[in-house]
Image (tube, rainbow over all chains, first blue to last red; front, side, top):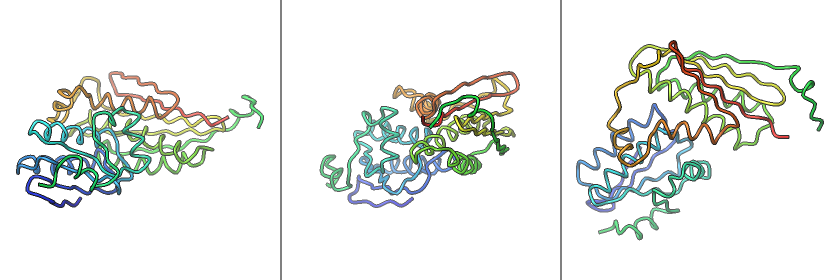
Length: 113
Length: 147
């Protein structure tokens, strides 16, 4: 997991590989820390994610809720076809803003201050 | 292709795997299932669906176990018309781990994570049965071979 900060309150989080019951606590930890240090816009880049299960979805939903409560948002970027399908079959594509690229997400969410 | 049930059920093979009921072993089960499901005439997406469904069944056990010592037994039976995967744990009924902060946040959003896992299993395979007894939970996932 790697993160970049295009601005004070915006953070891009790159995650890779498998997000499951074993690895999602790390993702949760990172998202909680971001919320605590005042990040309002989190862009989670999913382009390198090969596997995502209900625990990963749960952590992303938890992150989304934290960010929205703080007046921000958590958006998702670049999911592969398998990952996109998981959001579609669970209906979570209606809850999350999912963008093709980071640039698109930054432009739409007004993250670059 | 002929569709004769007597012919299709005549020969079946099974693979058994027993793993500790802990987060780091769920990936091991998924890896094994990937190999087993690949023996069926499934598409790439169908193999991935089975892998995710089994991952969800194991995850459900791991989350219920919490820090208690338990094992998960996975029995995969293959024949020419279906792949049946039985995921059994030895976690006594009623021993539900304390809900995490995450599950509380999810609940407030109107999403139940265990519900998400169950939903995924329902969608990803053709048949799901879940039976909970005093000695553990037994999940049976079945995916039929394409006609």
